[in-house]
Image (cartoon, rainbow, N blue to C red):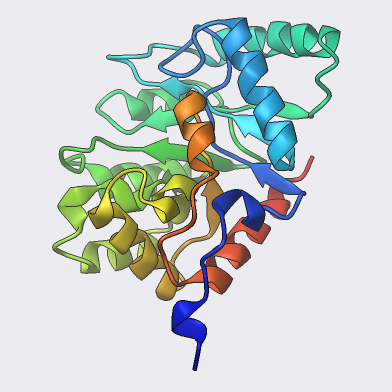
Length: 245
């Protein structure tokens, strides 16, 4: 009878000391995440302190904004890894990419191998303004090419909020869902937190990611969660063990 008054946990306390992150922007100078190696170092240290056991950093690949390539990311990752080791920062990390679904995306997976989170699992995102016109064709073609799409932060696409059936349609189309952990503490606003809770309640999330870009994101892990789906959130966080390397 007193559960209503029970204090909600801090987000960082739900990580359990062995959390594997699959979405962040820690490589320096490559997108809108860490600008310098000093930024990367501070963020990596914060990951260690919060109990991340491993992480996969995922720079944006977007033809019109961040025209990175697998080669650029791999080279940056190798150099950053060496620099972190020299600083005795030992948290293991790999690099993949967060691919923006636009009219150029299909050329990436038709012309070359994508940078994946693991095996054939590829992190994708779309515009916050509207869904791509050819979204379902692209998702189909992506899977025909042998990949499994993991859609980043579906709760943040406001254009889906008034039509929840679109989320079911995405799942039926083969999309896995990745929750942004900061959605659980209200970082992106109340509407997004409510949608995250709804998706959690319906068991639609498969994995979780920090989507850390900068120190403000790190500081938000010290906030208490604003949702009631504690057990569902913990389960999604634990699912990330699948990506252990």
